[in-house]
Image 1: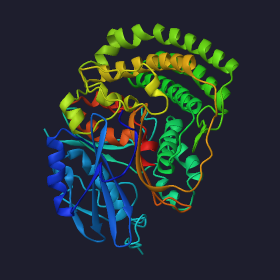
Image 2 (image 1 turned 180 degrees about the vertical axis):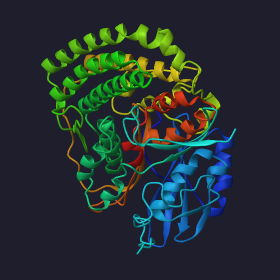
Image 3 (image 1 turned 90 degrees about the vertical axis):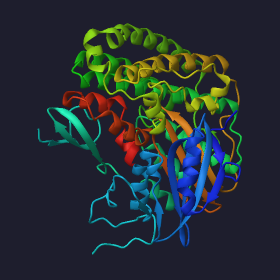
Length: 127
Length: 358
C-alpha cells in the first residue's frame, strides 16, 4: 500500500545540483512521472527547493539547494505547468528561475509596493 | 481581424471568488488567457513561523471553507507521521465520515453554481436546497456548518453517537433520492448538454502532463484518486475512482455528480464498519523532520509539505491545493473556445481561489 503521508528520506528523494535539475526532471518525465508541485524552505545560506513528482500514487522528490541570490533553470521547459509555482517561489523566496515562460516579475500575489520575498531575509524592502 | 483584450474578473457574476483573466479575443474566440492572482492572498503559510503546530490546525482549516476539514486532515496526518503517532481506528473512520460529508456538500455546491453559470437558476436552487441537509448534518455532528474543526493531532475532537449515526443514515437516504431526481436534468437535458458536451476538451495526455488534479484529471480518463492510498479509513472501504473519458465539461460534471453519490455509499460503509474505541492519542514531543502529506479534496489532490526541527514552531508549512494545479490545464482549455463559454470553462475546474492563494 502506498502511503499518503511520507517522510522525506533518501529512498524517495534524490539530492541534485542546481545544474542537474533539468536533466533529472526530464528523466523522471520519460519514466512517466507527472509534476505535482515544488516546495521551498529558507536555510541559512541557501533556499532548499523540493520538486515533487508522482506516478501511480508513488511520490518521488528532487531536492536542490540554491544559494541565496543565485539562479536556477526553470523546469517549465520540461513540465510547462511548473511556471506558476516557480513564480510563487520567486516572489516568496527570491529564487530566480531562468527561462520561466510567463514571468510575473515577483508580483503573482502582491503589488509592487509590498515587501518582496516575505519568506526569505534576502528580500529588499521597497522605499 | 485585430485582437481585442478583454478583462474577465476579478468580479464576475459566475465567479464565486475573485480571479482575473486577461483574454485575447478574435471574433469572439479566445486566443490566449493570462491569469492574475492575489485578490485573496492572506499569507497563511507565513503564520507557521509564529503559531505552534497545534495552533496551525486552526489556520489551515481556514485556508478554504469548502474543503476546510480535509485541509486539517492532511495537515494532522503529516504531523502524526513526523511524530510517529498511530491514530485510533474509530478516529480514522470519523475522519472519513466528515471528509465524505464535506465532499458531498462541496460537489452539491459546485453543481448548483455550475447550473447557474449557464443560466439554469432553478436547478442551482434545487442543488443548494439538497445541500442544506448536509450542512445540517455537519452542524449537528461538528458544531459548525462550514469550518468543522474536528481534526486534531492524534485523532478527532468529537464523536458521533449511535443516535446521530442513525439520523445521518436516514438523511443521506433522502439526499440520495433527491440527487437522483436531478440526474436526468443535469446529465441528460439537451440544453445542459449543448453548453457542456465538447466544450473545454482536455485530452488524457494533456491532463497528465499539465499536472491536473481531481475531477479535472479523472474527467479526462486518468483513474487517480488519493483515496486509493488508503489514508484515514479508506483502506477498509470498497472504493474505486470515478472516471469519464471525454475530457470535456460534461465529463467533469458527470464525475462530480457520480462522486457525490459514491460518497453517500462510502458513508454507509463507514457506519457499517466503524468500531468502538478511543478518539485520539496524546502526542508527545515536537515534530521533527520533513514530510509530504496528501489527501483527496473535492477539487483534487492536496499536498502539504511540513518541515520541523523539534522546536515549538514549524520551519515550513507549504500547501499545494488542487485549484492551483488546475490553473495550467484551464489555460490550455480556454484558447479556441467561444467567449460565451468562458464562464462555463472556468467553473468546470471548480475553482477555489482562497485555496489557490492561501
